[in-house]
Length: 81
Image (cartoon, rainbow, N blue to C red; front, side, top):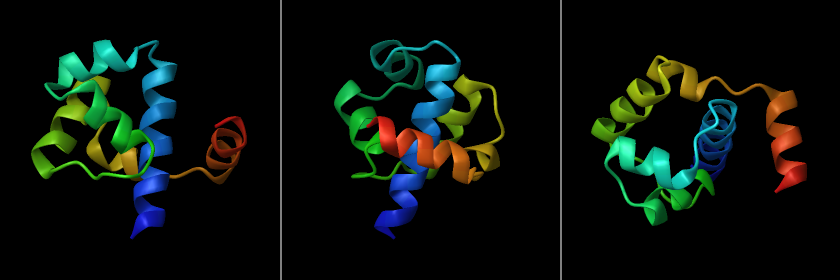
């Protein structure tokens, strides 16, 4: 299960950065703390269904897109972290 959280976190981070959003700004849009967003992006915590809906809505992507893991993106993100 931890592996899924890590993949999800890297995917969320990647999409957020593509949109040019800071952790602070995005957390405010979603209605969560920066600390919680950081924990999600690092694969330590997992969001609730309600938060998943907000993440997708604020990033303007279907929730399923947050679970679409591209191996090349995952590898690149892992190497940079």
